[in-house]
Image (cartoon, rainbow, N blue to C red; front, side, top):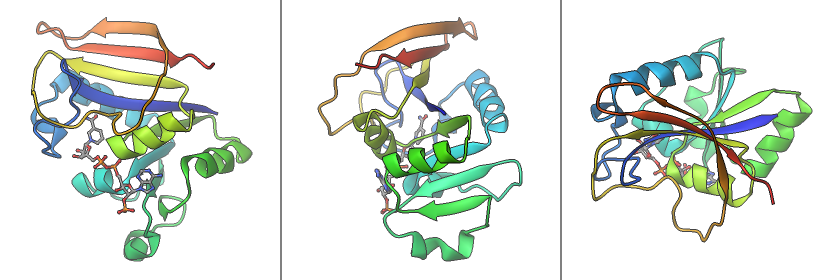
Length: 175
Ligand SMILES: NC(=O)c1ccc[n+]([C@@H]2O[C@H](COP(=O)([O-])OP(=O)(O)OC[C@H]3O[C@@H](n4cnc5c(N)ncnc54)[C@H](OP(=O)(O)O)[C@@H]3O)[C@@H](O)[C@H]2O)c1
């Protein structure tokens, strides 16, 4: 199973503008269209509870959404079998479970806490990072609070508008 981490950031590496959870207020239309397409093509999508709460998703038979939380019982009313699931499994347990089910792809859509957990556990194969030509100065980085030393190799880059929004794809080099 391939595990892909996807984010949009500013040129100074912020995935929130000043800590505000509404990413669509500053990300380009081109990135939003691209993200929608990646989402629509992904069956298995993993996120943290804060990311879910920032943009709650409705159940859909097309997707299996897995939301990571230490308190899954808090969300019993939102669970929809096979479509929306809240779990307190670790990143390693999730990867093991879905590999056993022979899933081909797991899309990890953030946020920073969950991304950092997956990166620390060396469970990410590719990083798909859109860089918007903006500087925020303050905001969250997608990997933070841990000493990491992860090498990447650029797979592809694509300038998608006049301003220079770049959609980059990196492979994580396994050591
Ligand atoms: N720019 C982008 O591309 C992008 C993408 C995604 C999100 N964001 C932004 O990022 C912000 C949310 O990020 P966040 O870092 O605060 O939250 P997050 O990563 O979405 O969720 C973190 C929460 O997940 C739960 N959790 C359960 N198991 C975990 C584990 N193993 N590792 C980490 N967390 C685990 C914990 O909540 P419990 O209290 O429920 O246990 C934890 O507080 C929002 O503002 C969102 O808009 C930006």
